[in-house]
Each structure stands twice: as structure tokens, then as C-alpha cells.
Image 1 (spheres, rainbow over the protein chains, first blue to last red):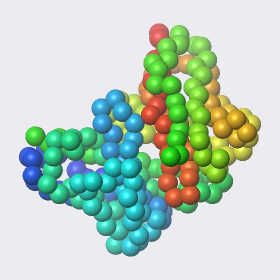
Image 2 (image 1 turned 90 degrees about the vertical axis):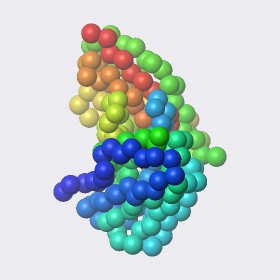
Image 3 (image 1 turned 45 degrees about the horizontal axis):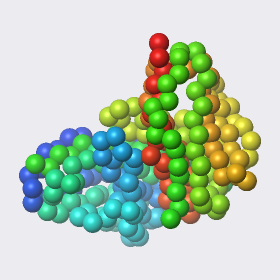
Image 4 (image 1 turned 60 degrees about the vertical axis):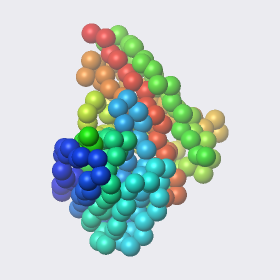
Length: 117
Length: 109
């Protein structure tokens, strides 16, 4: 299993440009998440999905959009990039988080480092 | 607002000592708790998970959970310089995970 994969690893954008960060998982997890992490800071949830066709906002959704057409893929779209979106973006997936059982942890992808100039 | 609180550190311990990392959580409905290790520039990596009150041991790591006090801890025995990283505590909610901001651990050789 590849686990959670993300592309690209690095990207530099100019202010106002748009791009899509790709995320895929091969563990058949229903739940998927997008986080951003600024230098020296914690993880902030951008969007999450509980299954194909179902998405919801996290703490910091402004300036981002998501879609979930399949169980495997959960792309994150940045429209009109701004310097404030310079960050490292992590995608993650999990089984059902609310169950008090083993093996319900989140699995993280390697991250995408985005710089907006 | 559901929260997970951690001391940001840095927590400095000498090589071979026991490192003790703590976190508290606000949501009494949380059932499962996790400790992740994150090296600088890398993604979080699961170290331990726990969902029953008491201790859970895995090698040099012991996770402790006290649901009455809403308290989770991680003990690292025989700390090594390679353990130097940021440790994130997380609580699982119904649909998502609530993360603390992390404790930076420095193991001094």
C-alpha cells in the first residue's frame, strides 16, 4: 500500500494564481482531511470529508475549495493565491474517528510546501 | 470550542532519561487519543494510540489515559537524541481529530 500520497511536493505560486493540490489514499478510508501548518505552529484543519460527495469546512476554509468525487481522491483547490497561504499542506485519511477501537488513527501524507510570492 | 492543550516547551532532557509529555482535552465525548511525532519539515507519524483508561506500553513508549481528569500523557524511557522532535497530542471526535499545538522535545547528548 502506498498510504496517502500528495503531489506536488513543492510549488511556488505568484499572487493571484490558482492551483490544485492532489491527495489520494489507497486504504479505503471514508474520512479525509486537509490541514495547513505554518512555521513553528500547529495543524489547522481546512476542510474534511466523511465520504464521497460529502465535505465540510474546518477552522480555516477561506480561500480554499474541495471536492470528493471518489473514495480515493480529495483535491484541494486554491483560488487567487495570497501570501497568507504560504504554508505546508498535509492531507490525511482515517477510518471512523469516533469509534473507541484500535486502528482508528489518522494517516498523513508527506505534505506539499507552498510558497506564494 | 473543543480543545487539546499542550505545553509548547521546549522540554529538555539528558540522553537516557525519561521524557514526560502531557496534554489535557476538553471534550468528554472523545473516545480515542493519539501521540504523533513530527520531525522538522516532515509529516506527523503515529507513535501511540490509547482509548482505555490506564497505561499502554510499546517498547520505550508508554501512553497513559485518565478520562476522569481528561488527561493524556506520553512517557519516553531511555530518551535518545533521535527522539528530539515535536510531539502532537490528538483527540478523536465524531468526525475529526482535535490536535494540540505540540511540545518540542530536545534530548541532549
